[in-house]
Length: 113
Image 1 (cartoon, one colour):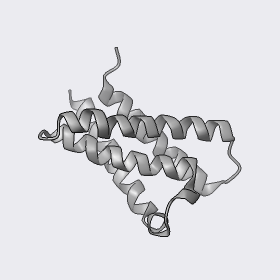
Image 2 (cartoon, helix red, strand yellow; image 1 turned 60 degrees about the horizontal axis):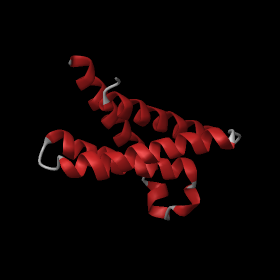
Image 3 (cartoon, helix red, strand yellow; image 1 turned 90 degrees about the vertical axis):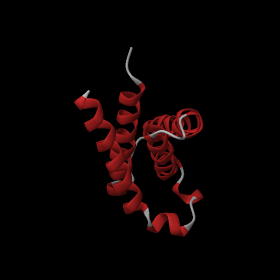
Image 4 (spheres, one colour; image 1 turned 30 degrees about the horizontal axis):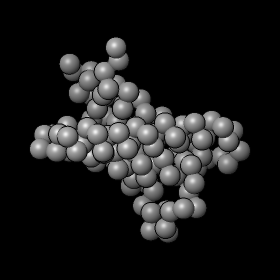
C-alpha cells in the first residue's frame, strides 16, 4: 500500500509542473489538463477537509490544511484560470513557490523515514 503522504507529494509536484507548463505553452491537451486538474483538486480537498480537519492540533494536520488550500488554488490555475479574481492571478508566483515548499517539506520528511 502506498502511504498517503507519498500520494500527496506526487499530486503537489504534478500540479506544480502542470501549472508551469501551462504558463509556458497554451497548446496543451485538454483531457490531460482536466485529468491533472481534477486529481490535484481532489487531493487538495482531501488534505483540507479530511486529514487537516481531523488533525488540526498536530503539525501534519496544519501542513495538510496549508498545502490543501494551495493545491486547490493550483487546481483552479490548471482547470479554469478565468474563474479566479485578478489578485489571485498576481500572486500566482507566490502560490507556486509555496507549493514547491510544501512539496519539498513532504518529500524530505518521507525520505528521512
